[in-house]
Amino acid sequence: MLEKIQSLISEVNQLKADNAEELERLRIEYLSKKGRISALMQDFRSVPAEHKRELGMKLNELKEAATAHINALREALSVKENTDTDLDLTRTPYPAPLGTRHPLTIVRNRIIDIFARMGFTLADGPEVEDDWHVYGSMNFAPDHPARDMQDTFYVEGAQSMLLRSHTSSVQSRVMAEQQPPIRVICPGRVYRNEAISARAHCFFHQVEGLYIDKEVSFTDLKQVMLTFARELFGPQTQIRLRPSYFPFTEPSAEMDVSCQICHGEGCSLCKGTGWLEILGCGMVHPRVLELNGINPDEYKGYAFGMGIERIANLLYRVKDLRLFSENDARFLDQFTAAY
Ligand code: DAH
Image (cartoon, rainbow, N blue to C red):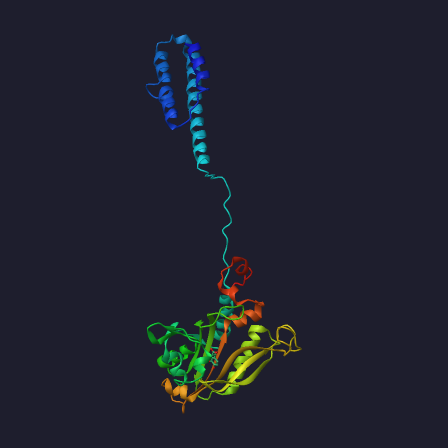
């Protein structure tokens, strides 16, 4: 019997299994209740007492060897299965790529933040608008040439519906809903029928501002604009207001900031002038207040509007407008501000 056990020990140590079924067959053959080792246990009962100790120890050795070897085979099979499916559970994971905010979002959030600190709240309106909110309520006469200034996309089959060409339409929506005091800024996308190039696009983004209260003067507008420019471009920044024309403001102005590169001396960015144009503004035309249900004898206001792309171009020196809407990760990954 001793020899039998000994040869079984070397036999089990050489067992092989290529798959789960073979392994199960081995387990049944050696380790089950009706298996070969159990059979030896039965025989062990009739062994004379003086051999029991030696044979018992050998039998235990056999049982342990069979169990350990079959378990090792099972382990090896499961590793093999995992490698067969290319799944390596021990491998360190790829770093998850973190996105960054879009540069236009960063600039928009900075603008919102500056005005929020001066008491302005957010307002918005639809991008598909009606003629009244975009033009009529903003004092554009039906045949006003200013309507041609902004080549408009009209909705087919609905002549009075259009893609808004400026965010000034939100002014009218706010005035219809709120009575003064009103202090809002309205960021949003606008559309114009322009050929796409490095310097123009058929859509871009604006931030509109509207302030209406009693006793509002041009001085208030100027001071708020100066504060805004210095917060955005730095404390050394100067502003300059040039007379201009918009149907919805009177008087109207265009605002320049001192050039970020040459600080007023003249360079290629400012085309030698020392100034960069960044927005339009003015005192809300009394007719606009009236058209939108606010008494112009009681209230006055100022308004302003700026292009977000224009400001992003100045802050980041982006030379081609198309980069903002192409979603090229090599461009977008360069903007890491937490805003
Ligand atoms: N709506 C004008 C544009 O799209 C920008 C603008 C100028 C808005 C003057 C204003 C303003 O509110 O007062 O060019």
